[in-house]
Structures are given as C-alpha cells and as structure tokens.
Amino acid sequence: MIWPALDIAIPLALVCALAFTIETALGFGATLVTVALGSFFLDLEHILPALVPLNLVLSGYLVARYVKHVDRAFLGKRLLPFMVLGLPVGIYAFSSLDASLLKRAFGVFLVGVSGLELYRMRVASPVKHLDAWTERALLVAGGAIHGAFATGGPMAVYVSSRVIEDKNVYRATLSALWVLLNLVMLASYAWQGALGDETAGLAVCLLPSIAIGMALGELLHARVPAKTFRAGVFVMLCLAGSLLVLRG
Image 1 (cartoon, one colour):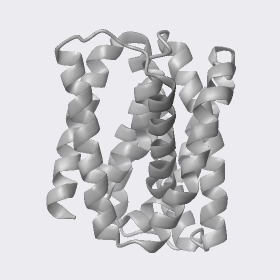
Image 2 (cartoon, rainbow, N blue to C red):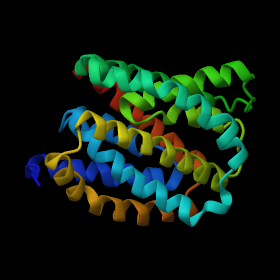
Image 3 (cartoon, rainbow, N blue to C red):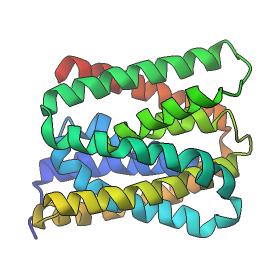
Image 4 (cartoon, rainbow, N blue to C red):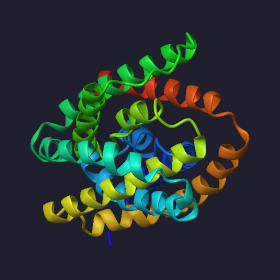
C-alpha cells in the first residue's frame, strides 16, 4: 500500500470531511466538492478511483438507514434508466481526453449549474415539473458527467427537486441512485486498472473523513433549513468552478 504525502493527505482529508458532511445532510455533493476543491492538491485520475469506494460507503449507510424513504418507482423508472445510458460516454471521455480540458469543462458546468440554482432560489421561482423529453435529456447528460467525474449529481438533483418535496425521501432516493451508479464506476475503474496500492493508501487515509462527515451531516440535516444549506453549497461550488476554469 502506497501512502500519500502529508501535504496532500491532510488538506484532501479536510476537503473530504466537508464534502461528506454536505452529502450526508443533502443526499448529494460529496464528489462535486471533492473534485472541485481536491483537484487543487491531486489530479482527478488519482482522486476519483479512491473516492468512489468511499462514496459507496456513505451512500450505502444512508440507504441502509433510511431505506423506507427511497422512492423506488421514481428511481427505477425515471432516474436510473436514462443516467445509465450516458455512463459509457463519460467513462470514455475520462480515459481518453486531456485532463486539463476535462477540468475546465467541469468548472464551466459547475458555474452554470450553481449560478442557475442560486438565481432560481433568489427570485423564488415556483418549482415546475419538466416535460418528459427535457427530463430524459438532462438525465442522460448527468449520466455522462457521472461517467467522467463520478458526479452526475447536479442533473439528478435538478430533476429530482421538481418531483420530490420531502427532504428525507429526496436524500434517500438520491443516495440509492449513487450506490447503483458507483458500483458501475467501481467496476469500470477495476477494468481500467485504476485500483492499485496508491488508490488504496489514499482511500484509507480518507476513511476518518467519512465518520466526521456522517456525524456532522446528520446533525445539519436535522437542524439546518435545507434552503439555507443548499444556498451555501451552490455559492461554494460556483467559486470552485471559477477557480477550475482559470487554473485548468
């Protein structure tokens, strides 16, 4: 097992603790935050194979504990099938395209999605259901993004927020989606030979971040209004996306 240097492991562990706190509270955001901020300390091709197994642990915990809240019909008939369609495109892009280009593209995506959500929250626009074809197109695009960055969250979040009102159902259903998609991603990384001693060492170093994130996230989920917390998350993601675009 190859251990990461302390000047990488410590800041990355802090980023992951923040990321897992956010996902435990909201049901999404761990990979988004880690990719956006963690890429300043380590390349994406090293972060993602270590992060996906950890995210599986977190999502699996949320599903196991709150399985009664999972909206199985919405997950199985509308979310999962169309995101799975986009996965191969993203997996190919991650293994074939320039890493700097992918980072900048992801940064643009973060700024766009975060800005849109912040604007929607500011003007208090009424939540409208998407038409079927728009919903499907967004989810296929989300699947492609998940294949590239293991984080198709914003697309699934965008669609789900217009269907599910209860925050407990929302979190549990998204967590179940991440479990299923990340099992595919884990198999993909194994097939590509991306799971080695270096990945294992990094994953072990980040394990304490999960425990911290679970404890803090459960506390926030119970006490902090979802709207307030989501606004802070999107502000941070917008800033992180801007830095990714500039830094590449």
